[in-house]
Length: 440
Image 1 (cartoon, rainbow, N blue to C red):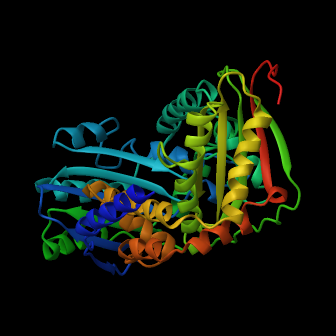
Image 2 (cartoon, rainbow, N blue to C red; image 1 turned 45 degrees about the vertical axis):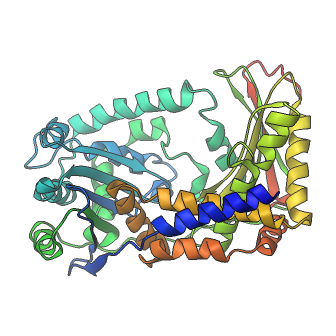
């Protein structure tokens, strides 16, 4: 085991050498827009991003899918950017842009050569101030979203697996429906409903503007004021977080997928939100169990017993709650019951035994290397700064993350497994081929 300790010490030394503090300047405009600036002149690029604090959890139960729909709709154009011109404007200046939506937020970002910073700010201010939301755009993006659902969920192997986990673990909280929402709800929605959703959530005082890269801080502040300062604030959206009752009895669910030939067993637990310390402890447990070829589940089930074609354990961290998900796909006609037992045995092991010190050092090294690698591009830095502010209310938590992980003890790992990974507080999902012929 000494080679593991040496590897861990070497990797931690490497992480220490690269884990430099991310310096930033932050402030609020009078309209409530929170601005974060990070200067890095190592390459002539700049990332401009806007994160809105609106996700699928903010939707009406009869109008799900709105937040994700706006991820697409707000590329349609504005009063000053003609329909179909958005991508051309970005690419013609050497940039690339994209957006994504979660249950908690919607994120728009672009990376430009640094001499195009002003273009990036103008386009994002246009998106925020006066986008064109009309019947043509709604109808066009409705078809785009339907095609995305067909590709990513309806026709993708295991595409609906995670949504079935959410549905099983959440009965009250709006995390219970998928981010892409219901196509029937989108079809039934009227144009005034879409316009009202934008007016309610896409406000400067419900957003974070992050600029990272080769910038002059003082000049950038002037540009931010020029392009965003006159955008009016609106009533700050209020949220009443729905409380879930504790799970006190195993939830057993079965789902069928016409796109798969091999079944899967999925063991899932409801866990605390992403800003908690326990969420990071559970993250470390996920790496211990399936992070890499020498992790516990991978080595046991894929290398030694060879009864799993694929196995994994990972936290799914969100603002209000999280999930801890373990899954396995059988190999060599192994039964789902045998795979579930192997997973349960490894959970029991981390609940009853302290991780050996050498294995713990290796685990710490894996986590530290990942954190360092998560901030290697300006796009990643911009995203991580926005996340830090929006979900922890402390942007500097981006610089404190490594120290927090380093402070987690072996005893905490065992205690978290005991607290959250209990058999009577979980969902067992049997995800089967459409025929349903596979036995458990």
